[in-house]
Image (cartoon, rainbow, N blue to C red; front, side, top):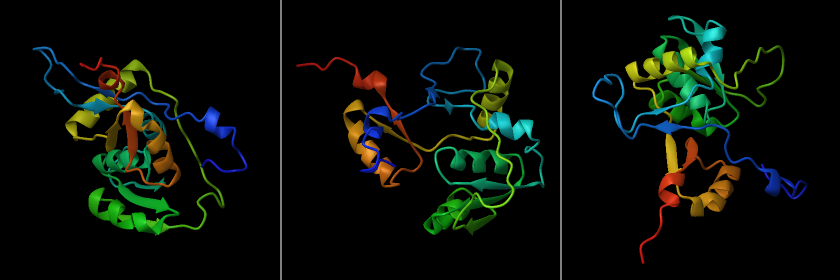
Length: 181
């Protein structure tokens, strides 16, 4: 969150750290992807590493945000029982009805007590391919709002207000196309 205490953040803000690819063409031998499919690997890797890919297991997803909503989708596709943990009680309907989480826990703080937190900056080629195939098989995609470059400042305002479901994706290709007179 950008505040009056930290105006320097206006200049250091990193509006995104992940690349989301969109299939624009597929070859005649491609069978599992279609034009318009999207992919990214940031949370699939640690889920597999920590054994969070087995039906019947229980997992808590802290935060229903850009990665959290995809974590719920992967966990449900693995056959797990999913509890969404959030400090925003109004996200319960989204978690249960839209993302099919099994339960929702509204928490005042999510970092008290003992916790194990894991992550991965990126997976290798083999793991990325496995994630893409798994996501395609289970129709898992990230919920995104595609914006143009001229909307970035408004998007940053909406991000600070928590008004994003669930990620902004800047369509650089269409934004940079020359405008006809």
